[in-house]
Length: 361
Image (cartoon, rainbow, N blue to C red; front, side):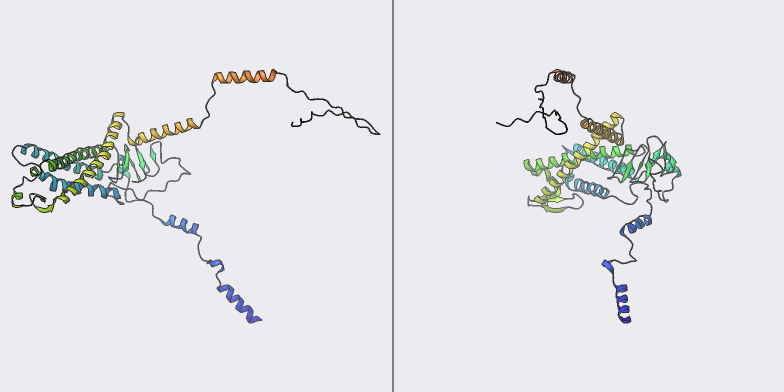
């Protein structure tokens, strides 16, 4: 008997009830512990500070690809005779200057630190940003004092959650630059967008000229002296005059079509962005101010839709007159009185009962 009790106790101690381990911490507790262990975020200096954004890689890849294709493939197809030499050289110079100008202003807009002056002077970017406690403060910036940067900032400064710092004259956080756009780099950002739009317009003009000339007179695109050594009209040379690469015409048309579609899409998007910022400059607004105004107008409209519509005065007076006439009118049916007498040895009682319901005919 004693041995059986020992075996039973041993089996119970080794058994895992419902597959649970006593030493296992609850999932909620584990999550809370992980959140506490995670390091606090650091403030980002500029667009090159980690983490880098995928849109930034798309921007540089598109710029490099279109520059190589435009200057290495399509511009050498233009006329080189004396009649059009001046126009071609001036056009190529304009395209080159635009591309170089766009590269410079884009680099400046990405590299510059748009933080507020007090943040740049007092803040140490190597120190983590403190955790914001909403139980103590309603807003991050109150009375021009940022509780996260722990400095006094200017009136138009906003604390960017992506960069973890206060930006002077905050406009918006640009994912393509991977940097905030503020008063320090807004001009470079605007010049970058404007130069990209003009350069894309030039690329589209070149490609449209090549397509039209190919169907009208393709020999006008084969004016380079190296084409005299090629007998086949289906063979074209790319990357002239430094590294001539012979290819077939379908490949050239395919590359031109892809680049043209990409240029049109980029031109539409960047053109819309450029017009939007021209509108903001004319209205003396920032992107942040515009978003706040739009959100306020949207909320006010939704609140007006939820309110019940007010009744018109004519309908209200007519309704009052109808109620008054109804109250003064005599009732149509009066209740009948029925006398119910019950004989009893003790007393007789008289009841007033309502009229009986009429039987349906």
